[in-house]
Length: 109
Image (cartoon, rainbow, N blue to C red; front, side, top):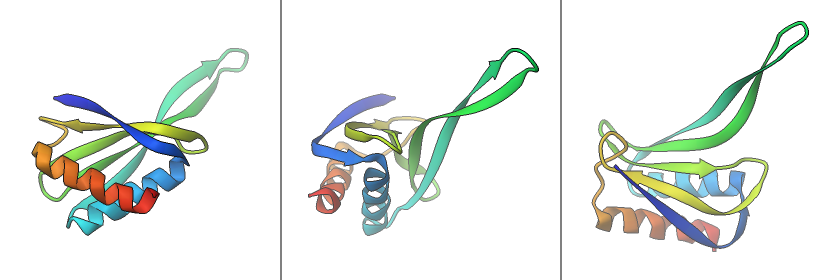
């Protein structure tokens, strides 16, 4: 399993980055499955449970995952995200990952 940081040339919103990642996956013939991740927090008193948004992760692939995009933060500007490969995150080659990143670039520049 490998986590690789990807630096963006400019700040973009998390929403813009998510859309670019999904469109790039579709361009390459992959399905993209975004999933918002939340953490649970409690506050004392009358015990309230809170679900706090952490990040959005996208599984890229068809039957077998090719890669995973992690670290998209909706509601914030960001200039970095992460690509995860290796089992169980994905089996894409370095060449295929680079092709995917090139496809993302088309939507962000």
